Length: 192
Length: 187
Image (cartoon, rainbow over all chains, first blue to last red; front, side, top):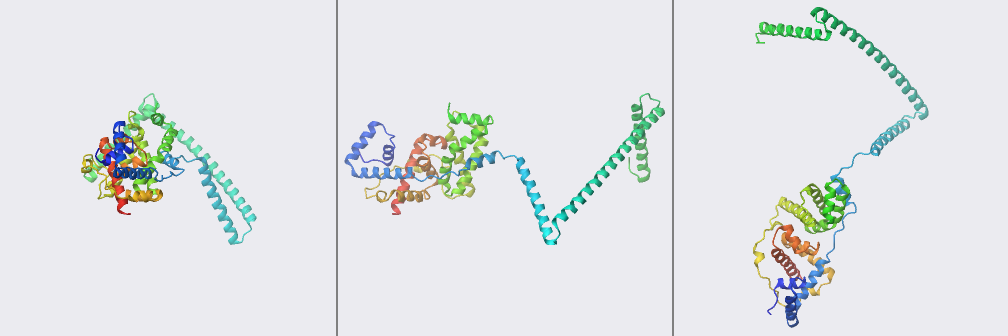
């Protein structure tokens, strides 16, 4: 057998050859130091290549990928965290304010509390009066509406008040359109 | 039933946990492959994450008659091809077709002189291999990494690259010979 080709060397090293071919190569290696050296050199290289250091995956790798695919919903705790941040900011501001102005903190807080309650009471009164006003206005609108419907029924002579109101309304709209269109033509020279 | 196919099926049914299991199973092999290809740990981690995002997005197109591991490596390889293409590398790209000149050249064993490889300590030899890997064409480097770092078979590599097994073997042998020659020359 002639000296080995490189592909024969690697196929032999990787056990890819038939038993017959393997035997022939081993017989050749027994008598050929050159090929024996070539095989051994490549065996060492393959072993070194197989034992190259591996990269360690970061411990949170899978979590990061999952977070990118399935973004986490904002939890209630996040809202509480945000609220806590703002509350602590207000407290910090108050503390700095009291320290720089030299005010008595307790007295300041009582004064603030009294003002706050007074403001709340005034606000409650305001909204109560507004509600009463809206209620009265609503009653007035109701009465006006009833009056209009009765008038429409009387004018058109139609039995149903809503139908009468509709007919009257459309008639008025038609007259407006006619007058306005005529006005545009004669006053501005535009076609209606 | 194949574990991977079962995990894919469960993921497609909406089980997030199943996909997390897929990630845990393949994060190391993919990171090793991409890490060796790009050479930077942080970049390799980012790229690997992108690969898994693509895997998830493409899961519905996976055909169970194929091996899931080769499918993931195909996605990773294509991702790197796009990456190198955007960088407009002047060297031979990963997407090297079969039938190139190197596939047909006869490989001869070098003259029997005392080999440098035999004289080096194993740790030093590994470092020399890593350095030499940076000097060989990307498409050969990829196959070398798949063979020796990921332990893929020639059949698996042929399936990933859609290249005949004979061509794959020849290229792996060529990669090894190039690395050996580089180590010899730099001794």
